[in-house]
Amino acid sequence: MRKKSVVVVLLLMIVLASRAQNNIIVSPQWLNDNLRDPNLVILYTGFVVKADFDKEHIEGSRFLWPEWLAFNTPETNMVSADAKTATKVLQDLGVNKNSKVVICHRGADVTIASRMFLSLENYGLQGQVYFLNGGIEAWKRAGYPVTNQPSVFKKGNFVATDNGLLVNKDYVQDALRAQTSEIVDARLKRWYDGDPTGYPRDGHITGAKNIPFPDMIDSTNSLKSPEVLQKNFSSVIPAKEKEVVVYCFIGQTASVDYLVGRSLGYKMKLYDGSMQEWSRNPELQMEKTKKE
View 1 (spheres, rainbow, N blue to C red):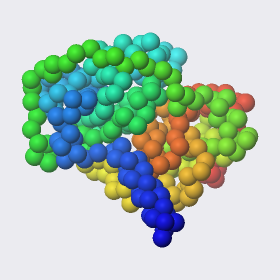
View 2: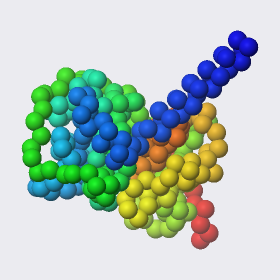
View 3: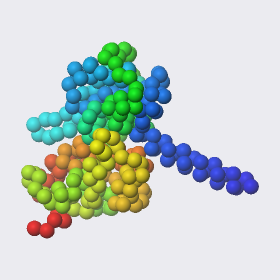
View 4: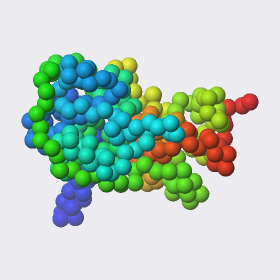
């Protein structure tokens, strides 16, 4: 009888752990239920001007311009801010070491909001970051109010670190040689197959699999149901034992695959240089599935 009780407890723990993973992607109702939590921080983000945020936002939200944490340079795109810079940005937004941070996007900015989710996890907030499914539009469709009143908050005490969730080309090469990770191309299948992209070489990283990020998003700019997301992943990567490294063109859209994989319990990382870097180095292997 005692052994049976132990088994029941273990099964319950597994179920709860699974639910905790799925709770990374939260609903407007969840956010409304937790809105008065003193540790809650809502970061409104996307490629929108601050005037749009000032016009309407969820009560208590703070404006996070994406390029404060992942900026573009003449040499490359999506350069991750160093830990010192990220510390200042996040402290200025009132983020504390015990904060629960909710990423809220507007409109079609799912990909850049997903990159902000990944950035915050990489800076040391893994397990404390949530993604509001459907963003502010879903919030309004659910009947919850918005405001134009400025949010009042104190400077935070969070100190950012680098947790290694963004990896480089050497990491990808080593993972391919040792077969320690699944490499996943998050771009549309036609680019994975080899359609011209304007980059020096077309196709995909040799050995990579394809989970296109648009398959995760519905017509309302929300992530699809957990059942559909699970099918999209498990049909390509049935087991969760191996780490999954995703990439795209510049390290932005693959963040959607990162977010979804995390919600499903996969061990996720992102190759930040992506095809912008890989396609320019002829020593790095690529292949096509499309016939010439």
